[in-house]
Structures are given as structure tokens and as C-alpha cells.
Image 1 (spheres, rainbow, N blue to C red):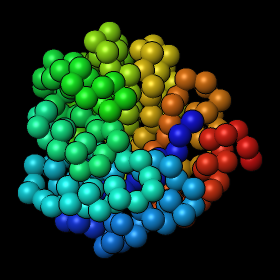
Image 2 (tube, one colour):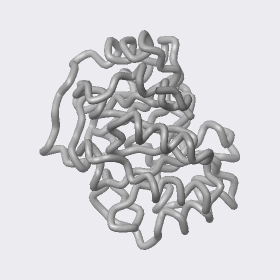
Image 3 (tube, rainbow, N blue to C red):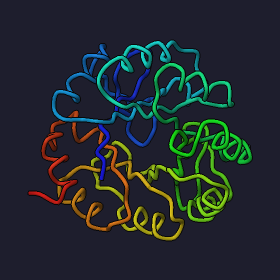
Length: 241
């Protein structure tokens, strides 16, 4: 199971939000590249980077941050505000190994099929983020009508292989990941699901890894607040103490 340290970008700074709310923001660094290098030094092979400005439809320069971090010795999974195939291609050209689609996938699901065909299944991931059992869009501010399992199953049948799952109410809250729903999503859809939102302990990571179906876990607030070290998270992902 892969551990993805998270770097959320707002105005070029590394921040974390509570429940996806920009009014509940904590700034952790003004140097995203230095933050990325620190995770690499601790053993990270992947980093999950989110362009929060893009997710909330704000103008930003975070693609330049992506270009800078992509020059480091790490693979980047990048999402936030990728609303069309041109934006996807731009992020991949800037150095992302995989891009994450959210609003675009829900509003125009056929674009996911087109993206997989154009860029390859390993380059595309869909965020099946949920609030009250329904997939959310537009930076988690709007609800769709489908459940993550319903939408995920359809996407898998169309060729998608990678997905994120976030229980929005747990994101940034250090309240624990929604392990049961994460595992169920992976088992019921066949997708390589990456857990996100609330992951805060080695025990949770071991439970996710021991499921045999969860492909990864994104860790943000717990790392930044030193509730868990990246080294401990990496050990737990391998089933070690």
C-alpha cells in the first residue's frame, strides 16, 4: 500500500483545511518545494498535491509549483480545478504522474472515458469524495445524486482504475478515516482506491493495508501536526509496527 503525504496549495503556500473549508485554514509552509523535499527525505515515493485555488475556481499560479516539485525525485499525483482535457494534459506535461478529476468527472463522466483513452489508465484518478453518502463537487461545496459505489462501478466498467475516497466530514479533523466505506468501495467496484480524509494513526493504516484491497492512503493533517511520522506510516503500510 502506497502512502501519499499531502501538499495542499493555496496562494502558493502549503495549507491544511478542516472539512474542506477555506475559512478553517492553517498555513504550514510558504515553500512547497522544501516541504516536498522533506517528505522525500523521509522516504516518500509519491506525493499527493492539491491545487485548492483551482478547486474553488480561483486564479492561481500553482501549476508553476507543480513544475518545480516535479523536478524532485518523487512521483506526483495532482488535482484541483482540472475542468477539461486541456488542463489535464497541461498538468501531466508539467510533471504530474497522475491527475485527479473531481467536478469534471461528475459533470461530464464521458470525459473520464476520453481521458483514460488519451492519457492511459495509470495517469487518471477520480475523486469519489462523499458527504452524507453522495459524491461532492466544486471543492466539496455541492452534492451530486450518486453514491461513490454507484459512480465508481460505472467508471470502472468504462476503464478507470484509480480512485480517491474522502469522507469530507472527516477531512482535516484527525477523527480517523472512514475505513469501512473505503474498503467497501474498493471491494464493490474493483477500483484501486486510495483512502483520504482523517487518516491519523498507524493502526488505521495497518487496517487499510490488511484489507488487501485498498491501494493507498493520503495523510495530511496528522503529518503536519506530528500525530504520526511519515516513517511510522510507511512501516504501518507494510504491516510492520
